[in-house]
Length: 136
Image (cartoon, rainbow, N blue to C red):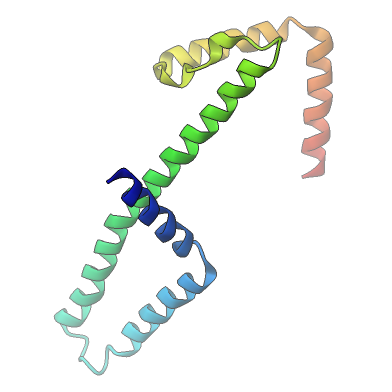
């Protein structure tokens, strides 16, 4: 079941992000709007588009969340592999995405304090950040 859902989610996500899909959706909405006088702006005419868009939105929320969850998990696996492979990296950081928000905030604060004490690295980082900000 997981492989089937993943395959469908991948295909739908890929199709939904294409310009042609946007143009098709726009054409449907324009066609619906232009058909208003034909149906005398009836409640049924309005209900058709409201129901259709609600159903599509409801289903897309789950597909988008699934895609984001897979992307995030893949990114974490890649970062964990980098932490494992780099000699000076602290392997204790592998899996920290499972910590609570408060624990992650405390960890980030501790890391920022630690980096703040390293004047040579900090100066280099500040120069790099400033140079990047000037480019934008």
